[in-house]
Image (cartoon, rainbow, N blue to C red; front, top):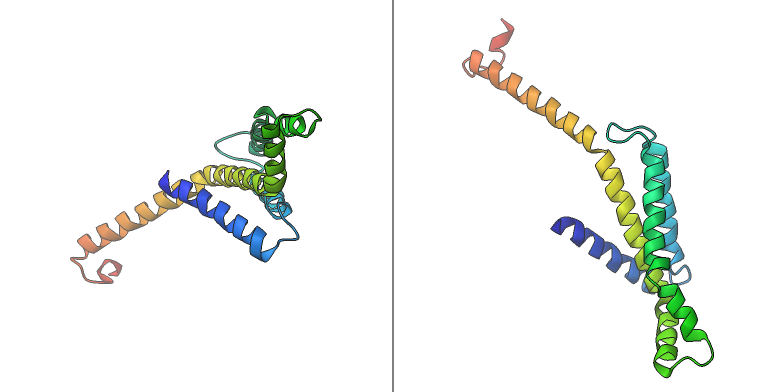
Amino acid sequence: MGVLLASLFLSLVFEYLGMVFLWPEEGMRHSQQMLVKELEYLSEGFTRSLLHSAPVETGHVVIRQLAQGLLIDSGVSEWRERSQQPGASALQAWGGWLYGLLQDFLLAGVYVLLTFVVRLMILTLSLPLFVLALLVGLTEGLVRRDLRRFGAGYPGAHRR
């Protein structure tokens, strides 16, 4: 869990540094394009899976629901609209101004989080391949160990 959280944190830091120094004209669109690219990888590479019958559709549903929860259900967009209405309190107006200033960074953070979730899905769907590689390596290692034991440690002794 610590490695995953560190990975998410570093992704956010690199995205924000990139937004400031490397691609200031793109802003949050860079992280949005990364999310689209990761969803394409998910769609192309995981049409079938041992873990789930329809991984791509499920992945898109999860991402849609997570985006809905982070952007709409959280009340951020409604709060922003209320702060821009005439008659809003000074605190609401100041909060709306601050949100407008940081909007690209907040949206980039949401897109980085969604990209992280897609990458976790890809990693989870790849687990059967890793288990298969582990079993093949374990079997190969045990066979070589038995051959060494049978040949008394002499290389090539089993080929007589």
